Image 1 (cartoon, rainbow, N blue to C red):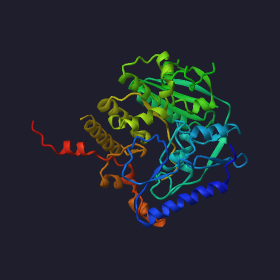
Image 2: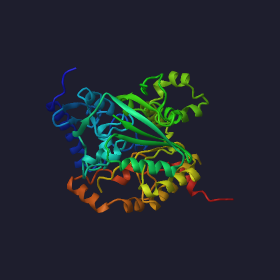
Image 3: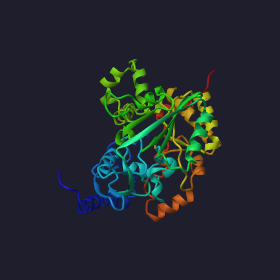
Image 4: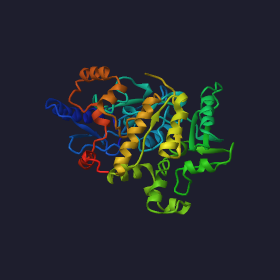
Length: 406
């Protein structure tokens, strides 16, 4: 395989620019086709697409400046693997290996280094988290940091949501600098596992390895393990957190080590998300990332426990660096969005949003967004609201219109 050079990248970009110019001249909205996605939002099949699956090359890893120059469709596992060869890694590495650099940049993506580094996109401004509705991102420079071969993980169990949040706040305020990663898995109102990761050997990437959330739950309080860095960074991939368990329950299969080993090829995040989109089953589940202030987080977990009964919950502290079944799911999401507004929280836009247009722009700066659209001549592209809103099917609309005869 020959080295991919900047001249080849420029040629590929020019061809895309010509396609964009034709769309722009005709004022035709278009969407970006990445080839794969970890989003649960259904794409509109009637909207023209611009295919960028070929923009998946790492052009350079500069060990002196600690910067990686990459195209947007580079998946995180490829970037991590290449950077680790130089003893480096991105400042924030999202939890699934198939998430791309461009996806993390244009959406909002956090992980267990977020307590110190913020979200993945915090190195950028203006175009970040815009879901590619201001233009097409074709090249990015990603800041890197030093990485060791192993990550030391310490499991700390808590007995309440309040204790979990207070433990994480205390860790975030610790000035000793002895740890790099912080996360928690809240299994119920009375049980959680807070893991503090410093830089017995354990892995989570092989078919015979345990799924991380189950392993953390069963670990002894205060126990410590060493995990190879790449295996740690994508520890939630196998089973896609606990989505694999939902899959096994649906097909009435036992969640045993043998079954997990046997079905391992279809139990990764890439395979599970692909199946969800292919079968249109994402609308029958609540899959959301949410951002809340610490002081309202306990109240939100209490709401989830009472109204939704969804467990476990994945919790990562994020440093703020810058400013019918489907009918039931819609109602649940609407109630969740209202609760978030009450508690001064927000949803991460990779998943479906059910806000009305007025509600959506009440949360975001519409004037600044419109100014950026005009600046970049992106008025013909789908708006941010168009991109994230959940589009109702004809059957759903019909159900809503039927009078209540009871």
